[in-house]
Image (tube, rainbow, N blue to C red; front, top):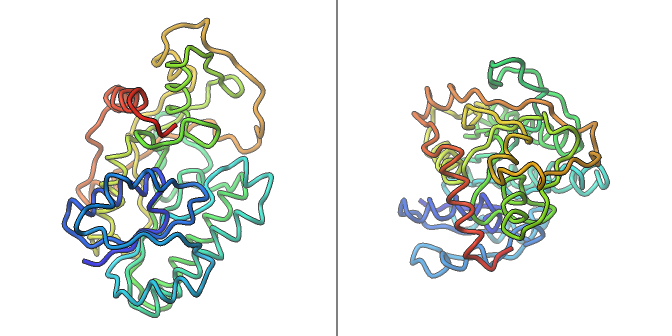
Length: 314
């Protein structure tokens, strides 16, 4: 197939591109490199089926008009402003990228009959209660403009499925980590903790550290993303993906450094946007896609630490 990946130079996008190439598809990538890095694609761009990288913005209609001439079968739409703290500080930018940008992609998909897989987020959910995981019918709570923008875009994507019969799927991966994730301020907690561990620095935890996360290894996430595009069973559906286990940030820090003297609690920058408990129920993905994670948290952390030790992409 001919496939477009927006945000394909990003952390998860890079792995989606890798998976699609391995599956034998022709791949185009659109990314403005505001968050992604061209270096993420360095080992993929020489692949015979990597057709083109376009450095461009999903808000630029001229670029989209030219790009969609290529008769795509699927558009994996991952391009977005993804930082929760940035969305609180600058909600307009997040809204423009995540809602207006998604609308532009939807219009192109509608005009060219291209299936869209829209990457949303677990951050739209309120919280998990007890040991029961969050499923797709759980309450949502847009506690940040990032979550609010993703919910708005989700509704637009599903409206095109109902109003125009456009093949469309909304996916909500839980907290994804692994190689190629940034290890700085915009990175995920696993990458930041591992980088600080290897640098001999203290691991800093926002708040009391009792908040939990369901941590999904990136190769499992990319396989989920790609397979939602292949299946008609999830058209018009919202689908979760996660490990199905949660861990507190305190426990995660101890798992990574095993030294309480190297763990420090600091004040939360935006405590109002914190979700106390994230635990995924991925039974819908298992039923409809036969998908489930292959990597344990311990395996994923080892693979990520090994990558950080050997890479220059920090």
